[in-house]
Amino acid sequence: MNFHGERILVIGANGQLGTELVEALAGRYGEAAVLACDVSPSSKTDYQGPYKQLDVLDKDRLFEIMKQGQFTQVYHLAALLSARGEQQRDYAWKLNMEGLFHVLDGALQFSVGRVFWPSSIAAFGPTTPRHQTPQHTIMEPTTVYGISKQAGEQWCSYYCQKMGVDVRSLRYPGLIGYKSLPGGGTTDYAVDIYHKALTEGKYACFLKKDTYLPMMYMPDALKATLDLMHADGSRIKIRTSYNLGGMSFSPEEVAQSIRKEIPDFSISYEPDFRQSIADSWPASIDDSKAQQDWDWKAEFDLDAMTRDMLKQLGPRYKKQ
Ligand code: SER
Image (cartoon, rainbow, N blue to C red; front, top):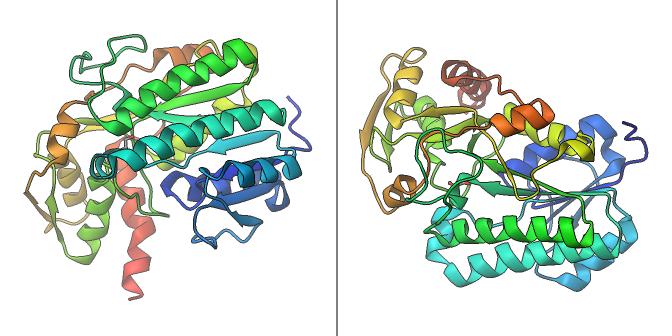
């Protein structure tokens, strides 16, 4: 496939995923091809390429940017995550749903080639089979964020089937990376724990020790995203959102993995309201459809991720 002449818009570029995706896209297509947008006035990342302030709820400004840019690919990542969504219900629903409609309508109006929108394990709920959760199953989410992802998946499929917008989506597990911090999610403990291991040698976890959740190291998430977006459209059979596996672990297992590198590391458990969110989500994911349709395969396991996280973060804290 020829991806020469691509023009790419990333909305939510300062977020946990956006920060890394912008760099990956700029690495592949060149900085000039990628416009990073976020609600804050300036880029909060190391990215030096084109940047514009954009609140995705401001439809006029979004459309102006889309009209000017004539984008071939749009990645719409701006959202409130699960924990913060419970604290700001109205805003979470508005941002997550209206933002998506604005992007889908813009894609239709300005003939954007491909749109990426992330769904999540949060689209599942307590009545979903917890282990090796299948692609097609009961989905009764119990968080505002999860409801917005479930509804959003249906709207993506609708815009694709009825209006011909080539929108593609992944149900991400918890994402773990060293370049940026997540904000407002339930899986965030699995990022914080590495920072605290290096700075304090201990961590107080807001989930119970045996809470298993599906997780993924950022390089795998980036690869999945780019592989999905680059796959020929005929291979994308699922237009709601693809299950995406990776690994599954508990806080206790991350702590054990960290102790292989930092033997004195200690963990304590202080579960809070996020425990019930985690309990409503799958423990592991069956992503065989993604494997079949566009050859997906995760590379990192827990120990490989731990070694890399500590190696990458180590020098940052030694300098201080
Ligand atoms: N990582 C997200 C959260 O914890 C789930 O998609 O909210």
